[in-house]
Length: 271
Image (cartoon, rainbow, N blue to C red; front, side):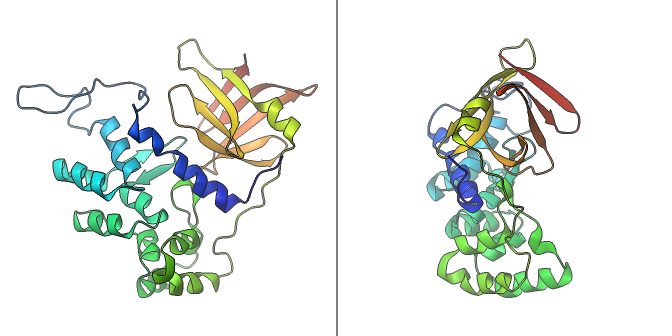
């Protein structure tokens, strides 16, 4: 068993985030009580900061549903600029979600409602002169990645025929869309790494490492599953956060712990 193409991984990983939005969302830690200003003094705990569950829903539905996006923005116009961290600093805006999924109508609506346009939204919408001018002004900017680590080139590809000129231009830039080679895992190695890893005494102080839909992933209890990319020697990074290291300790053919290095070190022991 081996990892599939990185680009396919990133796209399928992104798609996996969104079916959960049609069900009950997992609790955010710490969990503010649900609610909103309603005229009689009822507010959620973090008000006037936006309700985290509402922000997460907004970014999630911006991947696929113009109807839900317009309803949410109609009720709370500032949600057009919503941003959510899916985990380990994998920040995504509502416009960023629409851009890498090729959702032109959603992107146009969000921009019309105040979402700042980006290089990624321009690439997806086929705005060749905008993309060229930004690349000219900021050489190397084409190597900067969007949410989930998705390259600029993939955003242009997601735009379809209308973005073909942008795709052609980006392909003339040697580094565009290129990634460090990933190291495949054998089936036995995948099985060895899968399991539960505990780092504290609270109910959510644990990670589950699992293999699903062709890839290894990590989930904190109640959180969003993040795909893991293998750099070699059981050293991984999570989707959209290449600076984060998740390294497994392996002894005598068994994974005994994992360490997350992310502005500090967090060690979780195999239960």
